[in-house]
Structures are given as structure tokens and as C-alpha cells.
Length: 75
Image (cartoon, rainbow, N blue to C red; front, top):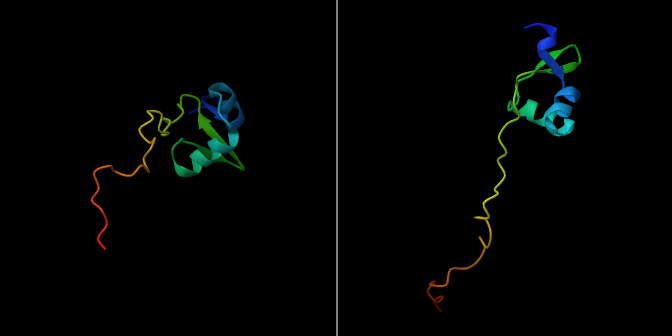
């Protein structure tokens, strides 16, 4: 790959609207492909941000709620 095929972390973050600190964490976790040149990390220009793993469906709501059909405790 030529040097123009790579972006610095700040350039890649500006292009994709991400936070540089979080991107560095994702690089350490291996979720974003990157190479280190000297002291700088560079990301391939065609690399896409990883999928967001947060729960957005609302299925986590009331997960602590006790079941209504539970038996009474023994004495």
C-alpha cells in the first residue's frame, strides 16, 4: 500500500465522526485494523468503523424485576 492509502487517527476520526481516544482503544482491542509507523498509528483509508454493540432494543428494561409466579419462601 502507498502512503496515501493510510490516514492518521485524527484524520480517520474526522472522516467518520469518532473520538480519537475511543479509536485508540478499539485499535488495541483489534477491532480496527491499524499499523504503527514510528510513534504514530495509521489506519487504512478504506477501513470502516466497527459495529456498535450497545443494546438499543430496550430488552434490558426491568431485567431486575422479580417473577410474579415465584413460590413463597419456606419457613
